[in-house]
Image (tube, rainbow, N blue to C red):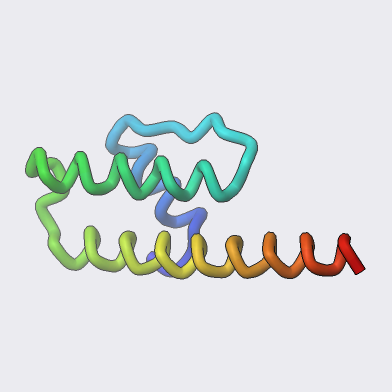
Length: 76
């Protein structure tokens, strides 16, 4: 697992399908679903869980920075 798409496919195999159009919201809800699945014991491999969590954190940070940058440029 290396990309957000990989995390989406990982979650799809476990029954979660993302239907949100806003990328930040989608990442937030994927992180919530990932934690719920982990807490329920439905992700047996800890490495998969932690890798997916790190990917989601990175993507959330990048999207947040992009949004802030876009808003700053819009005002200028």
